[in-house]
Length: 168
Image (cartoon, rainbow, N blue to C red; front, top):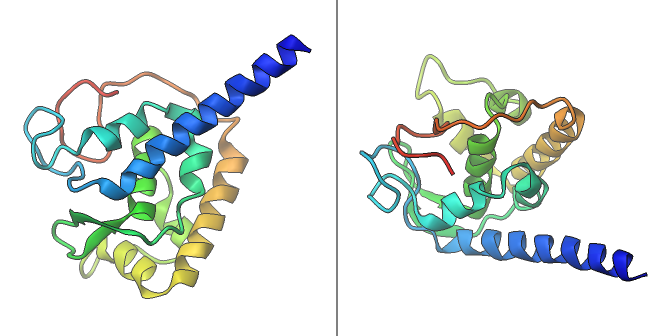
């Protein structure tokens, strides 16, 4: 009985920790994009973003749950305009944890190779909340189908920006 209670407490503690980390995403003002060397430098992302990344594969289901959270942050989206939402930041975090996510397949739209490129991601999700809801379901279904097949490797390479520092 003590072992079961301890296990339940440990699981609850982990969930609470992830929920707290994810709840801080709405306060982000700077996302990783282009920077020189260090977290905290403009364009390298804030500690709150990188703290979520430290949750590794265990935090992914909690991030997926927020993929329809349209709460806007004050972090500006370079080149495309507008502001990051909690959902966008959560997906960016998942992209920093898992390499080569088939984003446009999951969106159900084509990458705009003849026009603005990645703007098709932003335009599609900003157009209608139902697009976000469908994207969340597609990401969840995709992750459920591949999570046991993923090969987890430690890497110091950042996947979503050109930042050059030790990957959390």
